[in-house]
Amino acid sequence: MNEAMGSYVIPAKDEIIVTRKHAHVSEALIRHLQAKGLKVVNTRTGGLAPDLCTVCATDPMLFEIKTGYGSGDYLKALGQLLFYEKLRGRTYRKLLVAPTGIRQLAISILADFNIGIIEYTETDGSFSFSWQ
Image (cartoon, rainbow, N blue to C red; front, side, top):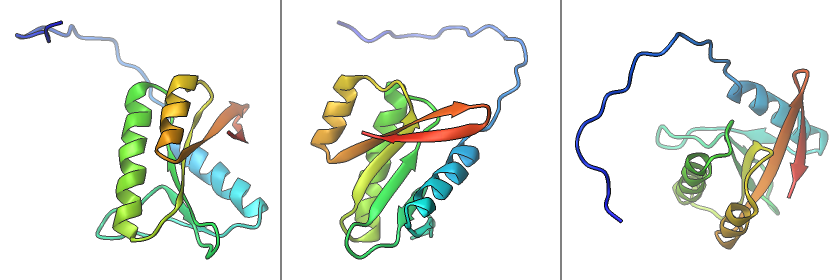
């Protein structure tokens, strides 16, 4: 199977309004984790920062939030979680936080990289989280 080559044209499209959701998911996740008694931070190391991590000596967790569940979303999250873990110099329980809909094949492959999944749903601006 050959890769496509050459140029192509993308026609102009109508203007659309894009709603930013990442910060809303992050704030809801912070409240969710704090309700579980966890302290969370997102401090920078070398100018880079994971979306969230817990401050815990026994079970530190690293979270990467995505607002989509396509292959690009979880592949980027995989790289970010592995990179941030090395950058911070310690082992974390790594968790991808994404909307419900990641396929089981992707979930099982991410599990092979020791990456857990927290799926979220939004109803009327309120988020609920399901730990897989």
